[in-house]
Every structure is written in structure tokens, then in C-alpha cells.
Amino acid sequence: MRALLRRAPTLSPVALPQRERGENRESSQTTGDTAAAIRDWEHLSRLLPPGSQTAQKIAANLAAVRGSDKAAANAAVTGTVALGALAGKAPAPRDTVFIFARAVQGPRMPLAVLKRQVRDLPVTFTLDDTLALSPANRLSAHSEVMLEARISPGGTAMPHAGDLFGQAGPVALGSSDVRIVIDRTAP
Image (cartoon, rainbow, N blue to C red; front, side, top):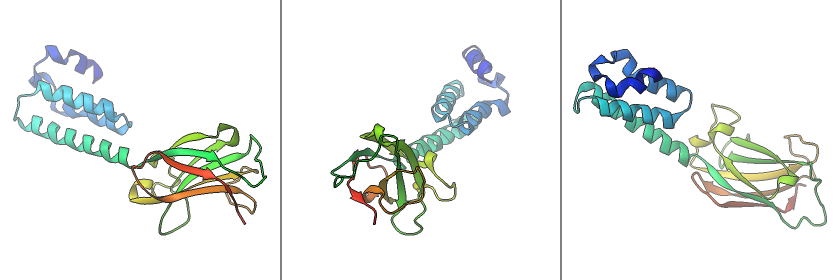
């Protein structure tokens, strides 16, 4: 299909088989390459007669893809995690740092998780649906989340007494520049 698209400026829109007019956009979108899907649709829309049934269908598909792209961008939270005053307890550089989002209401299972090490701090993070633990419980399904960063000396996901942590929230999805300071000890 890409070869056909490269030749498209020399072809009449009628020369494109109908099933192939949308095939490339679908394959780009299913591989997660939204930008390529948009480029492909825009290219095809310029080749078709304005107002034709196919041109209208492509315009609707473009609008849907652009809308899902904007929704995906708003279904993320970005910020920074830093160490604060830790009351004399200094973590080791190789200790694991878990940065995660939980629903404000509901189960405590994290919606999205990012794993780093203490030596990476301060660290900038982005939590989104690509970091979801379960496709059935995604970040984008919530309007607000609670954020937490926890240092686990043993590298385990389960919290333990003595773990260092920090929290922020509730935070609206789409927020940026959220700051989480690890400055507390778990009882």
C-alpha cells in the first residue's frame, strides 16, 4: 500500500481500488502510529473529488483519529519526583522507586506504574495508559487520580513498614508539572 501511496500523485483517484483506499490508514492506526494514519488519510483526501462519498468517509475518519489523539494526550499526568528531608534515613542509590497513579475512589490497585531507581532522582515522569497494569482499569477511565512515589529497598511492589514515600493529589488527568516529594516513612 505504501508503494501505491508514493505513486498516488501520478494516479487518478479512480485507479485506487476501493478496498485499498482505507487499508493503509487502518494498518497505521492498528500499529499505534496515529501520526502516520493522519498523514495517510490527509494524502488520500487530497486525491479524491471533494464531496464524494469516499472523501466524506475519509474526512469522518480523520476527525475521529484526531479526536482520539487529543483524548490520549489528555489522559496522562506528568511531573517530577524528588527526595525531601527524610528524617535521617538515606536510601541506597540502587533502591527501587515506584511512581504510580491510583483511582481517587475505588480499588487501591494502581492504574499506571513507572519503575526507576533512587540514583535517577529527581526524575521527570509521565503516567498514561501505556503503563496500565490492566487494560480493564486504565488511567483514561478516570478524571482525577492520586499519585504516589515509593522507595522499596527490596524492589518489591508491595508496600512495607519503613518504605519512604510521597503523595500528590487528587490530580486531574492532563495535569503537568505535578511535584511529588518523597519525605515520609510508612508506618
